[in-house]
Length: 249
Image 1 (tube, one colour):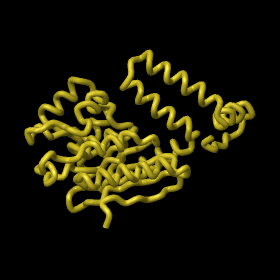
Image 2: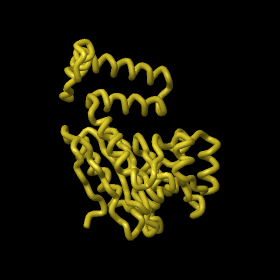
Image 3: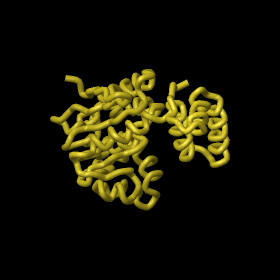
Image 4: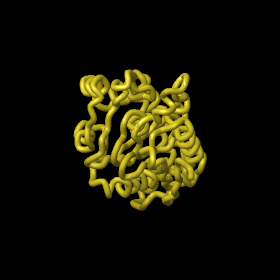
């Protein structure tokens, strides 16, 4: 069986990590499968959002320890392909999201977490630090003080704290996590596709660019969208008090 299953849900693609015997620990091969699936979704005009999930015990319990012991460790370059995904991604986190598992979760644009989920960066306990974005994304999401504490101590937080601290956009009972994530992704998928991708890029720019540069890119994207068929349709539909029909053009 594949370590990643792909399920279509209308305009949403659900990617499920499928290594239950290893608590969905991430290998180079699995990271490559995720990247390849995201690239395929990006290239499919029928797909407008993605959900990434694990199972009830673990979203992903971290990197596969067997690969950490290999010369050079995991091939981290594959993460660049995951981060380059243009479609919006919703993470559905149940159980453990530790180490590389939390880094994968934070690579998603929005997170829905179970109340009893356990999230953390325990690499310090192995004499290591996060290597797939943990120090950078956790700090941007939680602020320096809390990120520093979690990275230096390896302390885990539960889903309720992740939501209260702003790491997740929703915290629900475990049995509702995937359903809630799919509903959120479906709502996003119903919006104008070009605008959704532009909005994702613009919000990410806010964390990666100086303010002036981010504002310039936002302005350029706004003007570009006004010239698209969907942009004209959205304005016309609002004026005519009807539902817009998006074509992605």
